[in-house]
Amino acid sequence: MTEQRLSELEKKWLDGSISAVEAEEYANWYNSGQNEPLNIPESIARSREEHQLKMLENILGKLEKESESKTDESDQTPVRKIRTKYLYPIAASLILFLGIGGVWLYNYLSNGESTEIVKQDKAPGQSGLVITLEDGREVLIDSIPDGVIAVENGISIIKKDGAIYYEGTSDELAYNTATTKKGRKFELVLPDNSKVWLNAASQLKYPVVFTGKTREVELSGEAYFEVEHNSEKPFVVKAGNQRIKVLGTQFNVNNYSDENHIATTLIDGSVEVAAGNEEEIIEPNQQAISSNLAAGIQVTEVNAKECISWVRGEFNFNNADLKTILNQISRWYDIDIQILPGVDQNQIFYGSTNMNQNLSEVLKVLELSGINLTLEGNTLTVKP
Image (tube, rainbow, N blue to C red):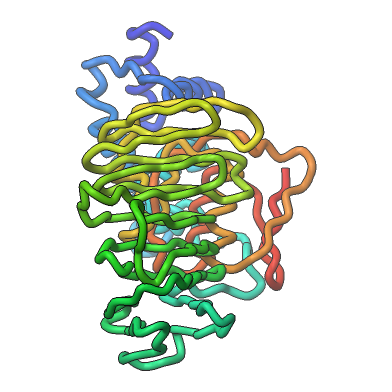
């Protein structure tokens, strides 16, 4: 599309004279930039962010005027009705980018008549952990107060300020397994003082004291690590077919079985990632991806802070397909997902939204982005 044509459509969109066909043309141009750099003419905006804010301000301004024209009964001056439906294609492009702000916009667009997405709402997940001791006993951390929760081979396992710590020394090898169920996440401090944040539906197996030449743990699910530096004893994470080796650094590992791949993302320092016969050393803001179905490691550039947004309490939907987004929602809200035939699970979304809100608010954002959803009981159904 030429710059002249874009400027023409932009002007029509801003003054409300754009037709349905033209609105679709304009939205298609905007959406085409989601999978590649979007070329925005300087006559429109200097950056994608400036353009998005400009678009949102215009949408809200028009909708406020429309709302005022409907509610102000004393004003008899004719007001041209804004054709709100033409705003939907462009507004939907912004919603996931704008996150929670999109919920407010959704309420305007629905004119107070939102479709009933949920029959019964679901509260967000919370802090919670189950620790399986060496002898097989399970300790539900959610339900006990701070203090010593168990002693194994002279090692005290302590709950304090919402985290788990290990204190003491021992020559005997014993393992604990920390498990977060769906709708739970938790922080623990390993015997070497390394910190681990476990995301929902994850499991970490580790010794109550690190002996030998390495500090080895085994992960399924997702975890963010802040590893205590020890040049004489490397820290090793086994995750699927990946073996991640560090001396001391910050990184995230995603190893959910329903994702069919393992992704290691580096925040700081350096990490050696091995999968099969291949090895790669990644740098900050790089991600090493290997598949459970094929050999090889792919290294890509990423925004590492976005990849650990879940630690800060945010869903990260940047460059995420629908299936990945639904998996995140399923784990955090402890629901089942049913995807009906005809749904494009590979469509890509951008943006983030708060994890500490009821499920219905997250679903509103997705619905406005064109996803047809219904939650009945504990099952979220996605329809074409």
